[in-house]
Image (cartoon, rainbow, N blue to C red; front, side, top):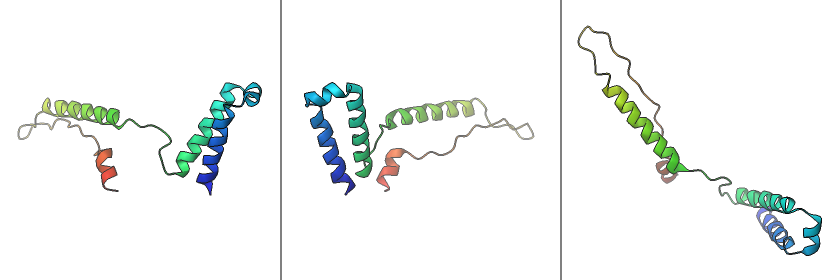
Length: 104
């Protein structure tokens, strides 16, 4: 029942933008806020995202971190027998969000 009710509320709110009496009483900020809240609630009930996530940026940062890790490890070659072992660098394994979506 929530989705149809939210859709009706969203339609009434949008319709209210065309009502001169309501527009005189409510500020544009009030109307915009109400519209945003109803729209967010509707998307949540429909199982859709309520925020934009940039996976491209996250993957770009992860690739840059992996390259930095590779460079750090290449600049610290393995020690000869009996020599002190240099510090190696590691990052936790992070699954690619795209492949995580595909596995669902």
